[in-house]
Length: 296
Image (cartoon, rainbow, N blue to C red; front, side, top):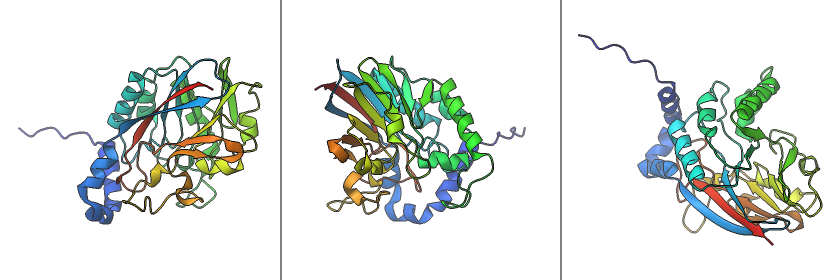
């Protein structure tokens, strides 16, 4: 008896299309780079945050890049890791979707809806999200497909329905002593730091989400802490020299880890969780970042 045909697997098709584009690099770096791309870890960091009345545990996840090389099973593992840490607050740094407007975000949102934190989950958009909205129609150029801004609002509403508030040049007090602000993407949006922090009270602790860390040198005022992603730590790092390529106008200055911006503002740049361009990492493992912030 002939076995029934299996239904097509869109995730498998996306993965195979992606691999075709990366054949040369895969041949160079081999399976080691692929293995490192999916071998994420937990990074625990601590720091003081002026204005806090009591300690704060934050789970920070960024650069998921769902839709080409990243599937539900990876998202599920990252969410499980964040929930296991029992954070007070979850922050998401953008680039949820890859630069393709045909990716259905529903499976991604089904996993992200499982995030649990008493102070909620807040997010910002990244440049790849804008690509998925159709904001640019020829690679990284072009004026975008008609209706891309409407799609952005539709996806934001879907995130809200999943319990995730997208902050686009706005913020809110999640606790009497804590203001969370978020800015639009530096490359594709119109970031406004002043608007994101406009409601912060005097002496109130402030955390600003900015997908791109290149915002740091131009901050108009001191911020308690800026959290960013975007760089992936360079994604491919080499011994001694570090990352040959970092998507930043400042080279390796803001590639990853603790950095400093204008007015002495501290920032933390995560290596992110997904991959972009090719499903490869080297000496630059994906990370779920767990921050313990204490009163200064």
